Image 1 (tube, rainbow over the protein chains, first blue to last red):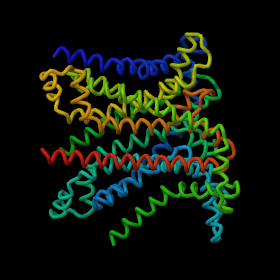
Image 2: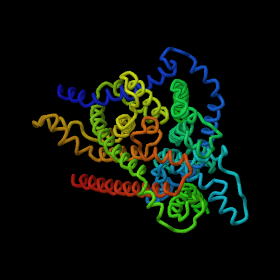
Image 3: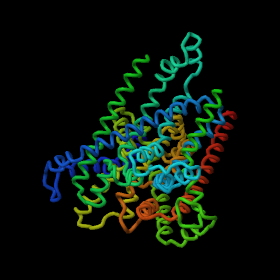
Image 4: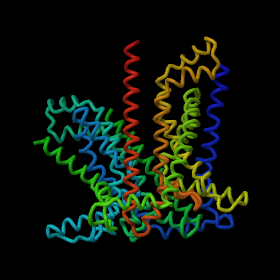
Length: 273
Length: 272
């Protein structure tokens, strides 16, 4: 037994040291920079400066919530349809949904610029049949579209993986016992798929709320999000301290959201039992 | 009726998902420099792409980084997974797993920024200017690869009978022999998945790399980012088409390997 405990220490040691230095220490650095000034002296100025970013935070949360909801509305029926298809079709469809994620995220977003531009592909096609042109690029809608497009697979995947394990004889039993289609959905399928929905929501909300490239490209820099503000502090304004305090707020906000979501998931789980 | 509705629904979503990619692939063969109107077929942007030395250097850098970071993170991560699997105390195990989850849960921008701050801080401390470069990129990539490696190796370890290694040791092999001859073959499929996953994650990463890289060593996504800041010519589309096809081939190879491994496992089970 002695050899095992020795082996255990040797095997784990590099990883534990690594995660202390490169996972824990960087987070401490964020806190340190957020509460110090350029010279390294303690200050609350960076936290006080956050009050100028209320609108940016509000916009980020609003867009991310809308994008997450749209993803959920699109994904739920999609996951259901795929889960009820034949085994071969299922695999193919899921692969087709995951495939675009292997294309570089910047390129995927950029190609929407080509589609949505005033003289872009969509307006050219619509013009040929005598419609438009429509102004689509550099609008909040374009930014939200970019989020939905990039993160949709993150919503489909967890909901699908729950639905594919769902025992559909339960739904038959429910309809035999007199439930109509809507009641089956509301009372049987939905409660059972809550864990998938919860993880889908977090997987879409987190990258949406913290994005910066999508808003720059598809919003034309007019609708700055919190990610843009952080990026600016680190890459052009070089105010690391303010950037750190913005990052800290973003991180705390997301942790809080996750705790609430997990609590919600637990309650929901308890309610079913 | 119901079937038609679901088929239409799936078709619409596929159009939504693939329209931008089709547009990009088609326009990469454009004979004019427009990124919206197709003038005629030509391969000139592929030629342009091959002439661009920045892109080629970046491609080389990206591949080096992906190979090295995938290899290192797979070794550290597999060792860690074996160590975690052997842990007896529950609270230590769950603490380690929680820390492992941090890079996966945190927004990428926060991970990138926090590592950048650490590097800048240490750089200031030792008096080095311009610390950001290949070493910092490598550290960052290993760090975000590690959780994925650990989480793909751990389930394989759980499926392996722990008494097998003990039996091997009872029969006279050293702990090292027991690991390499008994445990490792059992978890090899998990390790291969981890390696490929780490490689593709590293290949594709932009956000974290963007914060921890310097001007000296740029990866392809970073070069693409600076290219899209200016007016874009179809050579970016040509480049992305090539990358996409390469990744597609990698995925197909991975799939074939996996099905083969599954078949082998099935055969082994039947033989028992």
